[in-house]
Amino acid sequence: MRKTTVPEKILPLDSRSLMIEWDDGIQQIFTYEKLRRECPCATCREMLEQAGGEAPKLLDDHFQLRLIPKDAPSADPILARVDWVGNYALRLVWEDGHDTGIYDYDLLRKLGVDTHTIEKER
Ligand SMILES: [Zn+2]
Image (cartoon, rainbow, N blue to C red):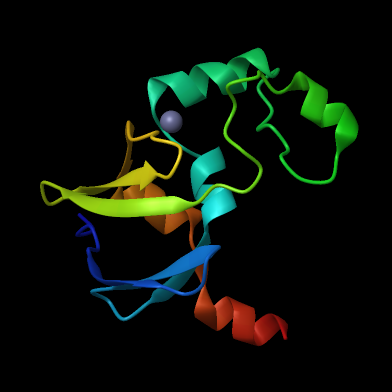
């Protein structure tokens, strides 16, 4: 069975994204927008369902914007804090007070973009 990889370092990159360095040497970039959109908490999942199963598009799409419930996350989410949860997950605390999203390492690994991939695409 594959051992779950664990974040070794979490580094803020700029005001919009962070980087996680995993214990297998892989570095991944995460934008706050994506992290917030993929928030696994019940409230956000429910909101997603109400939006028709499609992740609310938060940027540059006026038609989609109307489908987003009024308490949907802002288009420009700001991460306030990252907490360790046991040895399996991170809790992301957003500046608007939303703090119920527990991102387990497997989920994070899926959401991140490998820096190697980014370099290849350039
Ligand atoms: Zn949430």
